[in-house]
Image 1 (cartoon, rainbow, N blue to C red):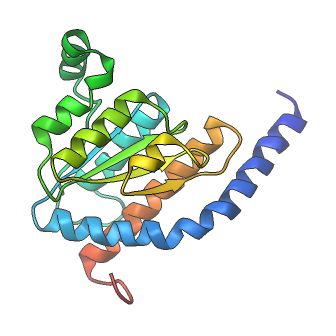
Image 2 (cartoon, rainbow, N blue to C red):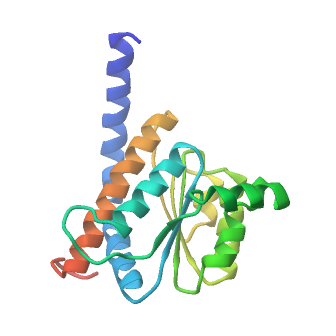
Image 3 (cartoon, rainbow, N blue to C red):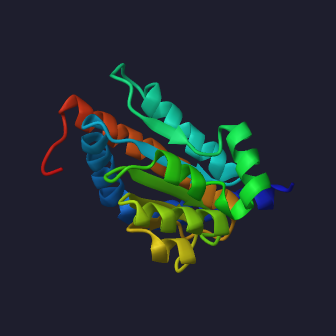
Amino acid sequence: MTLATDVSHCDDLIRAVAEFRRYAPQVRRWGFELAGRLGAGGRLLVAGNGGSAAQAQHLTAELVGRYREDRPAFSALALHADTSTTTAIANDYGVREIFARQVAAHGRPGDVLMLLSTSGASANLLAAASRAHGQGLTVWAMTGPSPNPLQSVADEAVPVAAPTSATVQELHLVAVHMLCEYFDEAVAGTGEGDT
């Protein structure tokens, strides 16, 4: 890798962050809404493939554990993390169903399904969104550039305008941390303004 490549990646990230900033109010609203739903006994189901799966698991770890300050644990499940379940579903029903089947098992009306995808076109995430809507869940998505199929089927989406999957994932991690920060702010009751 050359210095020019390193600088190019940084330049792409800087441009993507500048564009992403307009979604900060939406991520804040998600954090506050999620705190209300999980505080009332709901749960967050999260799914993604590859690097997005790792970020999905990162998000659930912050909610079940903690982000910065100690607080109660909240129900959040990364749907790819149970390898026995995912491989059994893939074997018996096909890869397209690995998340949808788990949404059918774990999702309840009022829960939130968060889907992370750099392409916004993964068939297994689209199937999960469809199943979630059929069961009364709210679907939020973090995706790559707009427009994309996942953005179209989600109730709300934060699309990242970036030229590479790596930069999209870097902005998704920023969004995950912002979401957790706002979630904790809402739980602590320190938020300003309307939630």
